[in-house]
Length: 353
Image (cartoon, rainbow, N blue to C red):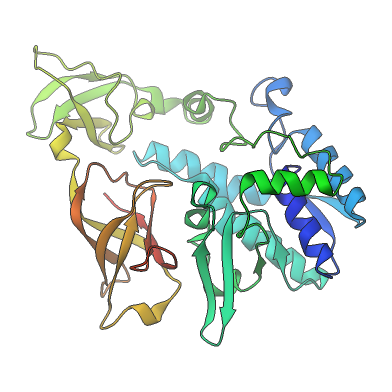
């Protein structure tokens, strides 16, 4: 229970279905990097704990706040910093789901004797003789199956997602019907541990990331100086000071921490029809016939699905061939392969360079 309307309604619906439940709010990050007034509206602020406690009381279940800060810092914050420093674009919400919410919390729940975790994500879980299936939400505008696509089948099997059939408006209506005072609470922010300035957040931990270095084109020509790797990610257009009067527009194509260099190119240099992924998670192996599956690939949260063919490689990777070029595929982001109907998650992997 994060203190928001989604988790409160999901809990209420699960309890209404007869589940013996206990409410748990995870303490993930102590406010401190920014003014407290900026934090209290987010899922790690003290008002969120109070909102969750009141929701649990209204539902009629016990509620506990459990400290997972250490696990969160290792699995999410450290990863977030390392990815940006390596020139990749991280997805901290996916990491949090994989390793903390449905990793550390699931382990904790099982120690307590619980067999499932109820959460307010907008996605659907279907269980049949073939196992557990992860499907898109009925309300595509709120669909969060992408954020859960890194979960292994065993983790998915422990989830209950009551909101997968609802729209956000209906969720708020249910909250009002059940007397939950979070019915009109705004949605939480994506980055719960950073108050806007993620570059400053990382620079305070890694001052060397602000050191200037050379700026090269993809052809190896030096065309300027960058003002610190932290200020550049693949696909970025703004903030590039290309010298020698070379006409733009220019885009960041890659960064290299070892040599402290940034490479720029044209938009065409970013387009890709083949994407190699690591950290592969196969949710439905039966879709792979001879290590090949066909479906729809999503290369970033809420991006348009593209017809694709995916092949499992001998080294445990996933090579995805797209039917049309994607303008940009950011290294570090999650690629999710849905089935050909664009409904069920088949596999996922982290986009490589």
